[in-house]
Length: 316
Ligand SMILES: [Zn+2]
Image (cartoon, rainbow, N blue to C red):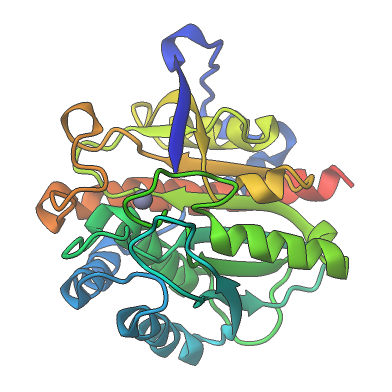
């Protein structure tokens, strides 16, 4: 992902809500949802121990197998969507590669889909283990899947979990959202648009870099305003008033969908270490992360989900 501009929350007219008035009419839908951070942390440890999980490597396939082994028994229906990737001229990796987006669905009784997303590939640097980027959001999505699982149709919209491949740029070239990054999300959004299924997505939430010990999440500023607002109100109502620290314009996997009209938001902590100096370096290790950070954001997203669903349904 790439940062393009910043606005501190102190300059924004942010309103704080008591739990009883969160979401206005949807107060009855508000209740704190559990998130088992210890279990998510174990997933994160497993991912990090696996080492680099770069696109089109055996570790990438092992990551998908691990996610499926954990979640398929809970009723999630998986699909692996391969797509072609050609590293740009000047990249260290050469030739035709194959990325794979991993998707899990739980069908709902109502029209529409809610998407929760992360990328699972790691930065293209030898010995980079990506505890925070992208281990943390990969693990957070896995634990959300456990909390949202169930046999048979879900009452409400269909839930879709998506682990994108190929978010990261090819080394040593710069991040570029047209030619050298977001390969999986660009490919999938184009495919869905052609097939006519993109309009089924009523809201798409992207998580990225979510386990920093000093968690301070940006709600990406190009993201859909109504989704941003629900997250801010939910965090405040849960007592996580320090969770969202600013709005920044950050290019990430949500943008190919947002640009095609899908309501989308990116929740990302893009201040990892002093001056973001641990980002995309071998300093991105487990000791810089915490289970408590996973819990705070995981609980916030799960608690916001019924409000998002209600708001998304009302927009049609
Ligand atoms: Zn990254």
